[in-house]
Length: 311
Image (cartoon, rainbow, N blue to C red; front, side):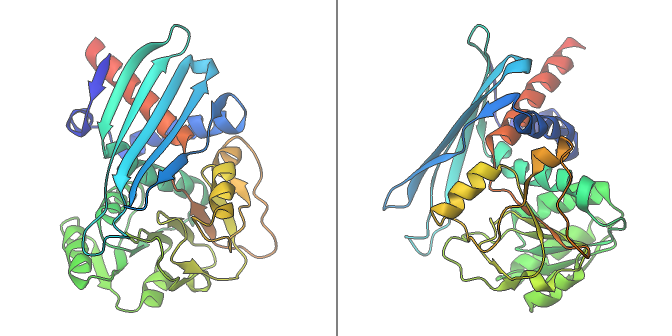
């Protein structure tokens, strides 16, 4: 069985955009019933320790998949940062042969970027010149790299609870020839972007301070922080990576229920028509991470490695 950590995956030179196609096919397969998956299940202790797991079968591909994530949510322990590690195992289902084990943070860190790219390919405005980042940490940098490769970005808007984080993101963007507007007011940042990426860390328990009414009429909002910092009542098209999982999370109040789920992303990729009403409305992507997306990534990494060793 092949074992890969973050360094081994990086050595393959795989970019987020390289995974968008395979993950799109996996999401569509799930929507069409060709892939069977379980929504993520979570156990959370009073100490903040948690364990998350999910699994699935992709019949046409002869694959089975398990994903596990273990971490410590520091919300109950102020003054320290959260930490987590994930692991995935890919099997050939016909003979239960393990093919690939992955450990580290790459899968969980890159999946949100891949989801954003897939949604941008389908729902971003025709002209994307500005991206807004609410939260200026790792997800902002990963998204900036990926979106710069997809669109001719001229500027970014950045709002963060830490001015130093916004400045660090501005320096990162400047090295890529992109100007940054650092915004003390989050409304200014949201209003500026054709695409808005919100990735507020430690978002559980945060009072909403962002309003969907600030979005441009044709904007795409990618909410890595599971819509926890958002409020608003304007007309939206809300898309989830896994609609069943999203509704379960809303039911147990892990995420706000003020944004009803209109569609599953895989269904739209498989040919379902978006239920837009009246004037164009912002598209909101709610993606806390789903089995189908991780399954698609793991299958693609295994195939890329096999091709590279055959050369």
